[in-house]
Length: 564
Ligand code: C2E
Ligand code: MG
Ligand code: MG
Image (cartoon, rainbow, N blue to C red; front, side, top):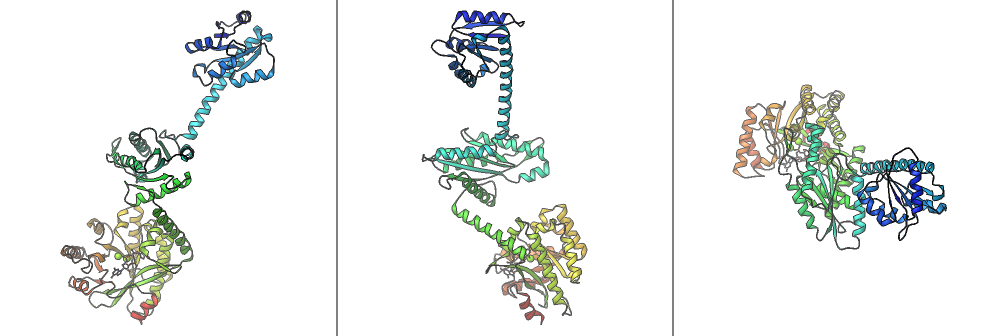
């Protein structure tokens, strides 16, 4: 064992050495007479134990202790303080300064010294362990285990601190919220291990375009944040955002896979946008949401107009929730006429929402209903209402009319949809082939097993399936073959009154002949003008719908005009 005695009194040193010789462990003892000499020797040599006198010339023992605090060279060294002074207060002061034990010089004996050394070493080891586990716990609490970045807790705390320090300066802090686009797709399709690898690769690339003074953190999942402090102008943050977006141009090579990814970034700036950390986060989030909406792989600064828009969308969502609970909707019915006789052969049910006196169009609220899944309840209400209305009308008609109901892609994933349709058909005794469900190509594009299964089952029940808005989306031939489609509805944008371009007319003629050759029934929607009607008639389109004949009508208006 290596022992260092720090004592300026030669008599005391000799007495200590004598005591150390007696016990049966071998020890290498060295001695110095001052704090400075001790510091010099400790720098180059490791000691297991330091026996340190309190009373030393120039600087006392406590000063040595204080100087050694936090010094890793004494990590495994036990320090025992000695003094001729018997005051408890001094003993305590020494322990507080970092000594593991305290002995008065009068009590030094071979036995006491040995025991003190053993105690002090044990205590020192325990302190080391405690420190290690403290460091580990702190790391766990502040670091993200997958990427090694700061975690949300640490990031929040640092941002608050940065804001507090920024208050008296004219500088800016930018908060960048970064979200990986379509990360769920990677996880779902390649598994979580590949997802994790992608996150690590993403972090490495982002790190390569930072200077090192920024705080880069993983907030959770595929969400990251960066704070950039001491900015002179907000546009400096956009340079960083542009650099980050650019590094996603190259795909990520993970194992045999080549994964193309992108990020959306929202930026808020302190103190321009907000003075508190919480608001700054909220606004960066709104900006990120906007960036995603703009088409992903983009960045967006927060603007107060964004906040306005966000709040009004949020308000609409809240209102829609209440409307769904109360079934505050109504259906309008647009006549569908036979192409030759121009007689009414059916109607299309179109939902209407009167939100406290303001009519909100389906194009505005259906996307919100889909995002919030409220469409599942709303859609079921539409089906019940439309089928019961059709039953009521057909009771009095010799030739029954048909009903077209729009279905959203989200509804196709609803396992209870089919049962609901069957229940309505049997409750109102409506023949299934009088009901057409209209789907857009986007719904067919999802191509999930569940969606395909639902379409097939609806078709097996006897209901018809129509492809809505044909000619606006992908207009893919494979959809016409892959799904059990009965009817194709040509979109209004292909009508000559909307676009008098020759090319569009030729597209329409081509589409009509293609669809006819496949044996599907054709419906033209959006007939507004005489010219539209003429073209559709010349192309022998089976059924016609549009403002030229009628706008969507209330149930009573339709009954009065067509069914009485
Ligand atoms: P859609 O299924 O293609 O319905 C036709 C839309 O075109 C209707 O708009 C209708 O009012 C409008 N329209 C009809 N004739 C003409 C015309 O001659 N000229 C013009 N410019 N427009 C015409 P609306 O009622 O605003 O509905 C918009 C869309 O909202 C619908 O497009 C449909 O995709 C969706 N939607 C409506 N009701 C429901 C519903 O109950 N469930 C679901 N999932 N979606 C619905
Ligand atoms: Mg439709
Ligand atoms: Mg349509």
